Amino acid sequence: MRYLLIPTYNEEANLPGLAEDLRPYLASPDTWLVISDDGSSDRTRAVVPDLFPGERVVVLGDGTNHGPGHAFATGFQWILERAKDEDIVVTMEADRTSDIRILPDMLAIADLGYDLVLASVYAQGGGFQRTTFIRKFLSATANFIFRFVFDLKVSTLSSFYRVYRVRSLRKAAERWPSLIQESGFICMLELLIKLIRVDARVIEVPMVLASNKRIGRSRMKLMRTTLEYFRFLYRFRSRHA
Image 1 (cartoon, rainbow, N blue to C red):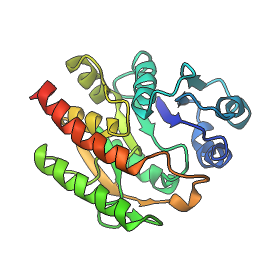
Image 2: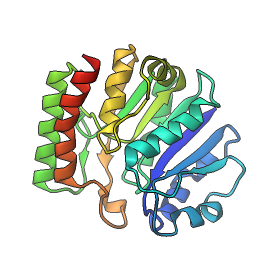
Image 3: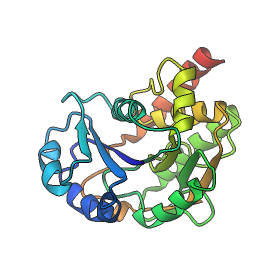
Image 4: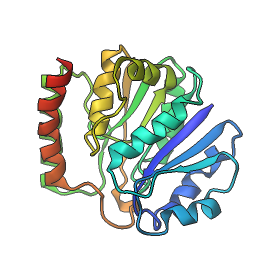
């Protein structure tokens, strides 16, 4: 079974395009779509049934804006309660910046025995279609620092676009009280570190971030997320040293 886990927050304008991108995958009877909504104030939840018809579509969330970490934690919990160890979970951005064209390659690589396949803008061949110098600089600097501190051998640490094997997620969930504790965008780094610490087999594939497809602005606040990185550094090392 394959689960597509997508967090949403005010993505009404982006969902029609996302539905077209995912149509070939959702046609499979072995695929679930799990929308984990983080308290959208627009019609995100209301348009899902029309855009994504079918029995294997679920919308989660309590109507409150907690942050993407909470949305992911809610989605992963729902999936882990139902999935088998050999099932896979695909996570991606709802705003279509995840390049759907590389998903077949990511799935094929996961089938070779990897527990986590990362789409990386920093891998050779990856990059950004459109972004500011300061955003690229701060992202690259934070990645360098955390790769050094945690001895990580991957180049992209916080991308949403990933393919997970359920068995590895379950191992991490059994080792820590919560699979994800962080509420902000830093949750992806937290989960990556936990999976590496349970010996997950990790590999990266290059991706060009398709920011030109996004309708509206990125939900990531640059300075707030940068501060989250360094608060996380202190908290995580204190908890899990």
